Image 1 (tube, rainbow, N blue to C red):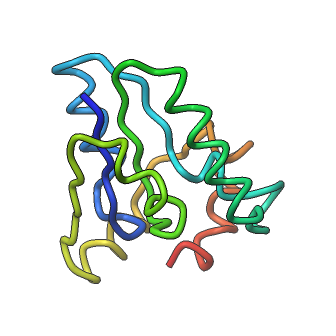
Image 2 (cartoon, rainbow, N blue to C red):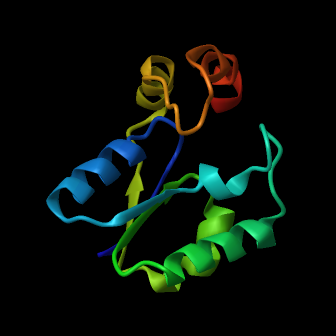
Length: 120
């Protein structure tokens, strides 16, 4: 399995990735991990693309999920499937507001909540 899941914040990308991995184990990469350099500052695009390419080269089966089409476009040829999630603006906003704390992205719930405006 080599799948890219693309969609806006709150579209359900992580939820779908976890469901797919439960059925068929695979490595998972959230593009947030390669898109930023400390905080909310975007990393140079080529650095992000190179990081994804390195990660792909180390995996047999994988899912990449994110909303950064500029990072995904150069690696699309590596995927067997592209899934685009578009549940609508209202659903995305609602999901963003009610998402649980993501300790892999934020050191505290408060830090995550302080970033909510950027997400929305």
